[in-house]
Amino acid sequence: METTREPAPGGDSIDRHIARWRREVPDLDPLVEGAVTRMQMLVQYLQGRKEAGLAQRRLKMWEYEILWRLRSAGEPYRMTPTQLAEGLGTHPATLTNRLDRLAKSGYVTREPAPEDRRSLLVVLTGKGCDAWASTIGEQMATERALLAPLDEAEREQLVVLLRKIASAAESDGPPLMPSPG
Image (cartoon, rainbow, N blue to C red; front, side, top):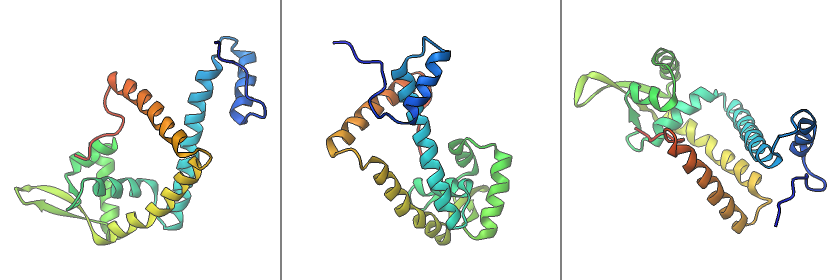
């Protein structure tokens, strides 16, 4: 049985995007373009919602990402600057500047590493934990609302399919989600 290549009746903005581009690129595969473009647009949507929620709490995305990364390390919520820079994909000089600003705000401290006092650890403070925690409920609600049109079985199916794609991408390169450190 052949899969249809035409947009579903009523469609969405991505179907309209594909219809426009098929005139310009006749070989465009509407299934691939539709899937990839929807993933990209949904990531942008979630990113925008996250940034808006963070702005209400006077947090910038880079601040949240550092707090999240430290929190993901587990208690006692500390990492070396090198681990942070690698996990965030940030240049060490950029990270140093950002850590200075977070320390000034009281979200992190820098402490000597107990096993090597020449090394420093970046430590998430109580204020940093609170700032991170204040964002999670809203983010989870946004994500739940995004997937609300799907029933539980459909959400499970979506996870299985996305896992299959992620596993294939990871087989050709590094993990999509870096380990906490």
